[in-house]
Length: 168
Image 1 (cartoon, rainbow, N blue to C red):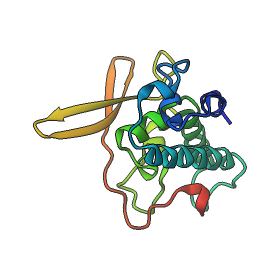
Image 2 (image 1 turned 90 degrees about the vertical axis):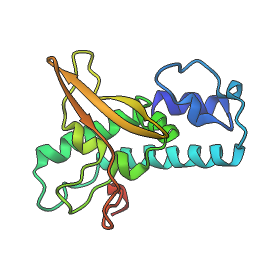
Image 3 (image 1 turned 60 degrees about the vertical axis):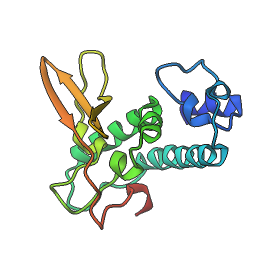
Image 4 (image 1 turned 135 degrees about the horizontal axis):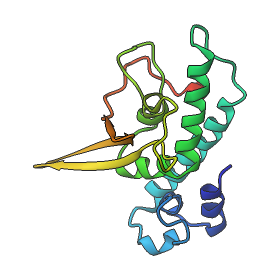
């Protein structure tokens, strides 16, 4: 699995998804005072399923019609998101698994792993998750800053045919 998930399992916390944060892996999620233990347990199960699915991508064949380098970058970026705690943080902020890892025939729509496209900043980060508050709305987005150039990715609603690639 990954060191963040292993740490969460060791702590045996109901709020393990909070423990799977790259910001502070040593902080026990029990101190987060979760009020909705059931929802947190569901998020933990969802995160475990995502990590298992992302790990299965390595063994999957390249989808028909997709260039092998694009698939390799997608798998690498999906694994980076999952194993560096970014996926757990994104899920806790309100991103969906399809926002992070979904694939679709709609070429205009991209999940975060596809948008990253194999690029890393000078600190070897694929992206940084941010929130923007505009009045009563909170917009979630990811950003990259590579060589002084910034790129942004706002999650769009997934098309009807979008699926998680490990479920195909």
